Length: 99
Image 1: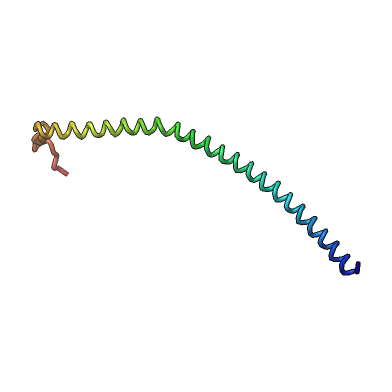
Image 2 (image 1 turned 135 degrees about the horizontal axis):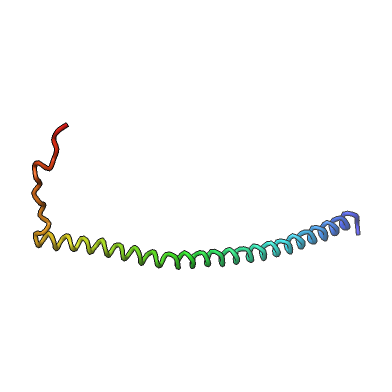
């Protein structure tokens, strides 16, 4: 073997070894990334479930309030049809026009 063949063989072996080490390290980094993303996903799911549990009673309360509002509108409409919402006459002496 000539000197150039020996140098080529040594450099090929070294580059292959470095590539193998980098590949193994990359696999470890990707495994850790997958583990971290799994934990993050579990945390986000827990937060989402908690927010949903809190939001359900709030939605019920808003529905009740909306029902009261709508029933008030219905009462106003019925009162209007029955003629009970006529404005009462205002007494003229009830206002003080003096400065």
